[in-house]
Image 1 (cartoon, rainbow, N blue to C red):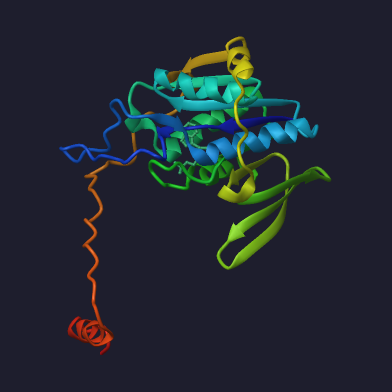
Image 2 (cartoon, rainbow, N blue to C red; image 1 turned 45 degrees about the vertical axis):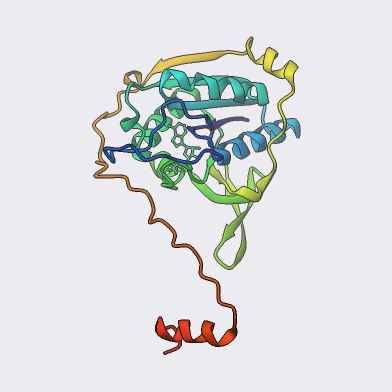
Length: 251
Ligand code: AMP
């Protein structure tokens, strides 16, 4: 089987986000960018399933600016066999429905048996692309996967749901979205970084896919969360209780 893994280039999760002065978005100039953490988990899963013999080929794709080639090189160094960069000139185009439509077209061209992707991108926290792709392709979907096992023509997937774990069986072809506890992505050794330079990286343009490129969402403004008020210290229980009472907490 052949699988597609979707990776998005996002601000590294260790970076403190700065909102632009004009509130039009988040400042990404000179900021460390990385593979979306859930996508790294998706890639680790695809590679380890290939090592178990489930997949023959792991193809990684990103829809993004030309600079997003850096995350694809990292994915190749981790162990993907081939990478596809679908280039856009404007990050505004990267809304879930548009990305899902492009991925659906790519699937038509390449014929994958499975698409593994993150449950959400940590920049927009949409948690929509996988579900939309599954709808467009009319494929089975298993979201929030924390365990994946192949057998009997499909995957048995344990899903993280409110209040516990749910185990379902999805036939291939299917879309699987990954949760945090699925695995720990591998460390990339230096020889693999060098080897990745010789692996195929195909560059296409978003206009090659015949998808309507008019954004459906408009960002009105982006704001910082309210500043957290400093804590207060009380030196005895009575003054603490009085403060709670004054704040109306005890009524
Ligand atoms: P979202 O619905 O935006 O939270 O994204 C969910 C998942 O869709 C991500 O974890 C990625 O695996 C995939 N995805 C979203 N945007 C892109 C993109 N521009 N390129 C490749 N994959 C993407």
